[in-house]
Length: 340
Ligand code: DAH
Picture 1 (cartoon, rainbow, N blue to C red):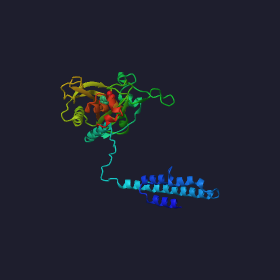
Picture 2: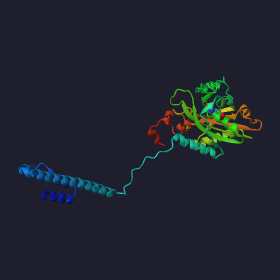
Picture 3: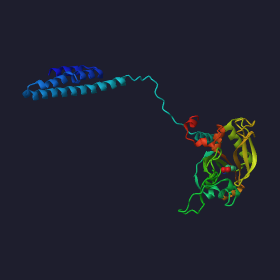
Picture 4: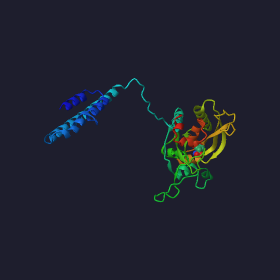
């Protein structure tokens, strides 16, 4: 009894885990007070031994239980103390915040530049018909221009479409057709989007990449309107000092057609590795929309004219940031992406 009382009162008064451990040793340890008493039991006369034994065991249980309880209350006190000791004036841990991919940033910027001169942005299908991607753009089945656009065909065996009719679009020019089918002039539209070609991937080629298309159809649209719009765009996008020059070219859906080069933004036209020492880099294709294309869309070419242009959006990004490999744009490496 005495052992029990003194043990319990000591446990209750204990202030920390260390004191509790000491009390435990003092009573229940190998030479603890209760342990020694239990050993003495053999000396107790046989008839009283059972009673004394039970009593001693009860005392042991009570001490153990009280110890356990106290341990728990001390534990929760500690965590309360810890909670109270949080310094709320400490600056927090900054969470990682994502941002738009450089490609999307540039896409928004381009859309914004054209919005200022009245162009709307449109979106369209990546899975396309041969008709919209080629045929309606004056690129007939056996046209040599198809060779420049290595096409990925979808397996149409289980569908109603004829073999070879359903493809992944090779150019965003398909959207000239889709928009002219649905809307009547005046039209001023840009279309950013992904295109696909069966190409070996390397630093300047990908089997999927981004383009953006622009076109306008209205009365009195002239060749000089096209040149002015392109000049406006490259100056807004690459900077006021950027020069643009035009070279004649051929696209089946424009007549006349041209290719646009800008003064190299790396060396400012002096000549460097980036521009292959020419001072100029090719950035776009363009031209006046071919009368055949307008006619097919039921637009009378003697009343309405149009211009169109197309450029690689991926290329605009790599040019602006002087990246030497297109593949960096699809690399999920955060060390690259965090720089934008
Ligand atoms: N679609 C052409 C290509 O992928 C680029 C292009 C050239 C678009 C001339 C045009 C254009 O709208 O007028 O190579």
